[in-house]
Length: 80
Image (cartoon, rainbow, N blue to C red; front, side):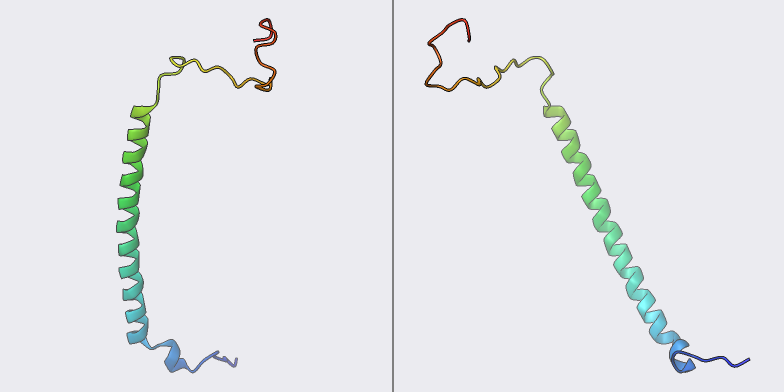
């Protein structure tokens, strides 16, 4: 059985370059993990702050905007 290599076998077994590439990947993964943990902590803090500032439902009654143009408001008190 003949085996054909896409590249010379020495390229496929260059363990020094493979090891160096893996070290870079691990370093980048560690950095991204740290950044993600920091971002997740900030998001949690923001969510907590926003939840603490949420007004209690029903305490504020706002009048819905009128569908009557301002030039016509007041001409019939039964409408408003």
